[in-house]
Image 1 (cartoon, rainbow, N blue to C red):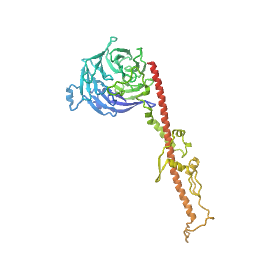
Image 2 (cartoon, helix red, strand yellow):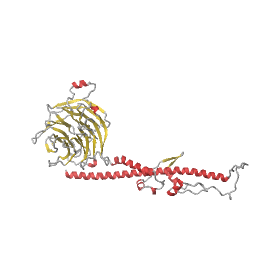
Image 3 (tube, rainbow, N blue to C red):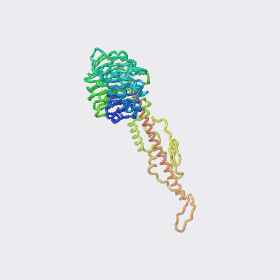
Image 4 (cartoon, rainbow, N blue to C red):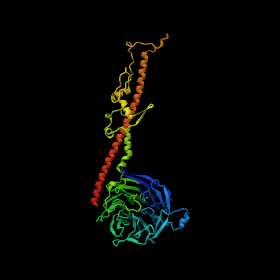
Length: 546
């Protein structure tokens, strides 16, 4: 899922498994939830179930991502009045510009003005506060293993503070500095996953620097944008790849291990001033926020056009957006290896074949519905020779179901055996044709001539059952009784035949429907295998490049 903030909070579900990618709203909170003040930062906890947002209202809100429910507010106000909070040391006096959860999500770091607050979410109190004099903090974050807390400020300083959960933030500081360039205001930070974590920093002049987190040494510096660099994000599956965006309206993909520092590996002009960027967990797509409130998704394999664009916060600019991180156990470091090429096959967004085949997409469901509706207009068919090829291939065994006929319950197999047996009205009437013969069945269904009356009176002596009256009342003879019985038997047979034909027709429709669904699932499986093959090829191509 993707969380974005501006005047409001919106959480999207990104789906790239369909032919056309989409961003659909999962939950949101409007501006009234934040005192109609602009939000500036958003962060996910380690389970990807809670987002923290903050900004000009100087309060941090913890929100359930799935339904937008408010879980808690920081500073904590348990039994404390708002005036008491304003007088206490937990009061935040400036706009909050950065939020970051520790590796276990017990602690939450917030930066505002020249102060950094560390909140203990378990004990619901302020753990410690770090003051940086007159330097205004512009960004801060925890490293993935939670051992360090890194901050960047407008004076161009980047410091890493050792963080111990049992004590306060220690005084031993790693300063990221170099004599190769003059310090300029830091705009954004990000840390790569992996055992050898790297820190990337963006600057107002459009440059980016990459540092070794453990030693604080400079690995590379590169000018990428013409103007302010506003966002950067490491690939979640390859710590070498870094994506950036800036006020020049371009997004770029940088290989941080490349010897060349002249041009990025890939770049595209979006056409708007860009404010924030985030790598998707599939390591293929990136989301970028614009100054006019749009969210645009790009596929790094094909930058000719965006895969999806939505008006998220128009006309307000997107302050910050962030994809969910890779879910990790508390206290563990991500198993992503530095320099390892992204495994497109195991993309967290791409569903497994079992998941993909278990759910038919709406477009395929509509196709199946059209197949059912067209099958209902076909002539009654009872043998498999008239069924579509997909049905004969896909269905090895016909489903067994019960059908109510009057007060009796018949199975499909009983119906088939009943239909396939010639049904006769009587010994004196002609035999009905087998129902498997379609043309003869149509004549039976449309216009069945009445059975001929019994007229063989020469050989059968007439016996009077009721004596005639002087008024000419019709006599009830044995011939009349036999004729009435034949007509009665014919009527019963015709009604039963119609019921059986209807049940057979419904059975054939269901069989064709099942065959169509099986065919759709087979096509989906072929598409999935083909996609996996293409992703493996792309993976190998990137492995050779990088």
